[in-house]
Length: 165
Ligand code: DAT
Ligand code: MG
Image 1 (cartoon, rainbow, N blue to C red):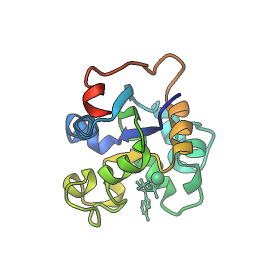
Image 2 (tube, rainbow, N blue to C red):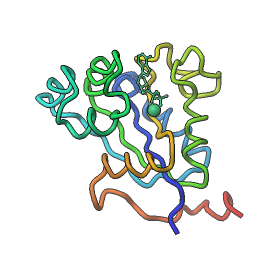
Image 3 (cartoon, rainbow, N blue to C red):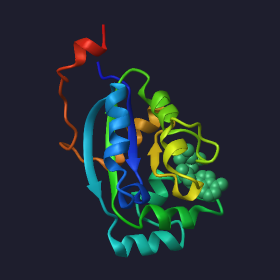
């Protein structure tokens, strides 16, 4: 059966700051399996509508951050997340959701522990470089939202027997 999966996204600041390789390698070195990877740029027309108010854009407002829809920072969050290309990833492994959240660190990078991605690479909540799903259900939901049929890859890493007994 399918292992647990999580949706990890490098936000526009991570891409612009040249941190893509650094961030991917944290999950890669840990031993999780990459099953999906692509760059995505929200079309500018949609991004502009998204930034104004909760809208019909299924990628950002209503779906991905739907729980934050009524927060005062929501328009800024949408403006930020649609401001440039993001790197969309699906990662698989036992306990990957909680473990990825630990690797990422606290939402506010100043409170994130050294050694975590946000703790090492960021200083503000509004520029916290990476997203990680907060539950296995949301992992599935977000992967289905961001990846189309056929974009995910089933494979067995050569290192599998050296990682998993
Ligand atoms: P996380 O990304 O750690 O799962 P979250 O799901 O609570 O955090 O919020 C999603 C993003 O929204 C977060 O990465 C940055 C932004 N955000 C959260 N709380 C915020 C706040 N109080 N002010 C500004 N931005 C905030
Ligand atoms: Mg969250």
